[in-house]
Image 1 (cartoon, helix red, strand yellow):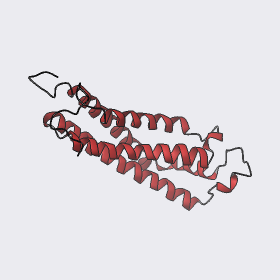
Image 2 (cartoon, rainbow, N blue to C red; image 1 turned 45 degrees about the vertical axis):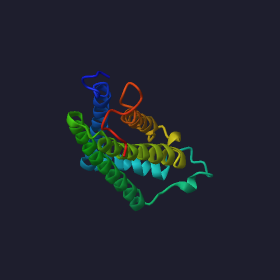
Image 3 (cartoon, one colour; image 1 turned 120 degrees about the vertical axis):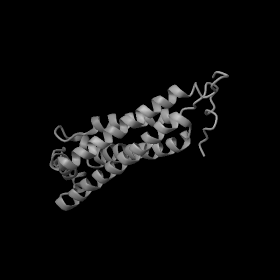
Length: 181
């Protein structure tokens, strides 16, 4: 940090956090938009995963299959709603980061970003990797396996969350006027 501008060391990290949050916000907005405007494509994905049609059909696992189209569609709509809310929260966080770059207020931006990024982590980690991948044995399917994409999305959101919470100053403390409260 320089004596002239004590927050200058924090600026590159704040710019990086802003960029990462905005990138995840854009991605989630495009995912939600795509699922709304091209509803049928990923609807089929969710239906196949929940029905476990292309798994090994192990009788010890097949009792988990959800064959009701209504339940499958409700699950899909819930995913889209979750994606949309996460996108909106992350867009708000991106705006807060951009405003904070001009005049402080990083704590609000950090809290909002943390909420949105946690939503993404829960969707892809708990929803797709744990529930889809393990409970519904998505890993067994050659045709309807979204684990690679889910893992990629989980890691990008996780990286963004880590950067958002890195100490801002060279000495390990947050920049002046930036508290986590």
